[in-house]
Image (cartoon, rainbow over all chains, first blue to last red; front, side):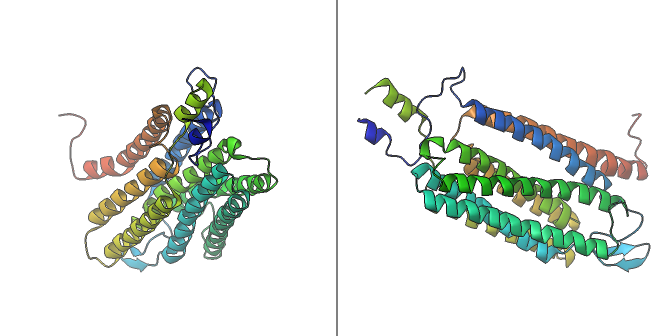
Length: 213
Length: 119
């Protein structure tokens, strides 16, 4: 087998990783970071679940009957479903961007990275709209247990998406400038890990907060 | 074959094609649609809240696993990464379940008159 044949696959990882585990230390560290993020979001989601349904005054998240009176739910399920689709699509765009980076197709990698960031921005726009609407409806940060735990949880997630969008835009322009060749595709892979993790957290938040009453 | 070539082959990951990733994306969308149907069934009293929660929970767990396995490449990567991720993820899940039990299930049992402290 000649060298060119060995390189024929589209995944171009570094040829030799000189570490005791044989694994890239940056990737190892990043998985450790993602692990710590699991604990952070675990505690935030746990707090939300602990206080779920325990607010003694409105606005309430879901429609129902409180003290014999029928109340409206404040959560906008159609909007959040749409933004969930958008975030899922951004993950698809991210994985395609990584594939093109590994193949050395710079312009396509740039386009898909920018598209990922754009879809993430739309998700953020939906969240800003949702928060603004809630505040206008009288649901401030300290209104009730629901609002405090809701804003804390979804706000932290939104902050992660914001960081991700900035990260992806920076990376997209580095790819376009030719500073991330296929052998440095790990930089994009790590950004992808971050982005998919943000998506995975939303996959947990969306049903627990919005869909399960 | 030189040692350098062997290292390249050894390290090379056979990631799936774009078509496969698009297929997973379509599956994720489909599962989200089913989740929303689960919610609508609950709101319209088609089935009880517990059943809806179970359906939605299972669907979101499947979505979680799909993203982690294929988009985050844990299926193709070293098992060390799987361990680094799964252990804290399970701890996080334990925190969520623990708090839910403490604030919802335990008070409900106490309200029903169950003597849970002293058999």
